[in-house]
Image (cartoon, rainbow, N blue to C red; front, side, top):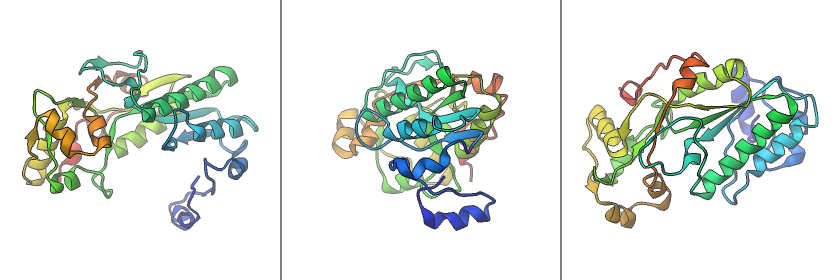
Length: 260
């Protein structure tokens, strides 16, 4: 499904049958009823509020027809909030610290409830930072060109990553192999703090490393959205995608994925 009619021709060229609809416009979704055996839902929530009305619309429409056998939802690892750098597995309870993360928790709960009461096999992918060298803005290069600072080592946070191609493979594997009402970390094996990640990217690209600053200085120079990511630190276990989904990552760390 696409909300942009102008993209329909390009999708057809790739062998995709497009369906024009908008998750913010409930009547436009009527053709979805009973249409799909399997659904991958990657649409982000709206930009405001604590509820994901888009996922609520999707669930409402799906209930009106023959339900799909499986549904994979792309959530975010941000639902955990700050974990002070601790290792986190999928049994940890969400503790969202922002409305952005609360909307994701709302979507997860709606879909897991659907699965529990309808027989739909629902899998939630909690996704960290997505990168893709073949996509505009898909790497740290633009940020490095701007010379934006990163945190000093004492203030720095652990971040997690996944290559877009590996994420696609995880989503497909979950459609066919995922256990019912199951959460999976769609994350690679990288164990880096944010500043070290940008240092590695700079070295790979032959660019200057970003300046390091204290957290107080960063709060005066960086936008609020970027600062919010610098306020949460965690490391994601990814054992489930390897053992249950039998995924072998093509880019196990960002070093392989960012390499020119």
